Length: 261
Image: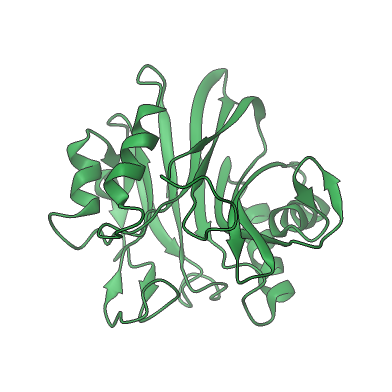
């Protein structure tokens, strides 16, 4: 099983359609079982095409592009969390080529105000892979020491939604540096979750952010914010950073992470 997570910073990037094409081509080539996306934007004033999805929804256009070039067809699921950059509805998405049994979203922030940019929702899809039901989450959480929305509270709410009896992957931008001790990353591991990067037989540096980006305005360090977590110890063949200028072109202010289970 191959998984991919990417904070795609959509419609904020230069040459956005070109970068969408790079992502789509990689997904079509690799045939990822599940793709988790964050910062999936659509214009507030965009035309609605289905449920809460508008015609310029980045994940919708990505799915359509993938399905143009891939033999395997993907479906897409979306949940919006808040308004971003004053003109976008921002959310998270999951794409998969497998049958989906159920999709749910959960509010994990204190705030439930769509106009407040720190409001956070996660998306869960129960996907049937080789006859087995597996839960996959797309997550975009807050910062450890945020006074309005502390990470610990958000992660506790997220953790409470996990079915402990089902294999579960939490994928996304956790906004906590895995290289930093005694903060959000260590809190995640203390909860009993496992990092597929740590479990992987083969891995690279794991760095998914270099220098300052939105939300990390003063950052000068290499960060590992984007993770694929699992609720049990499983064999992981490899964990690789992608879209970092070394392994595929850069497409966002975050690099992606792909793992082979």
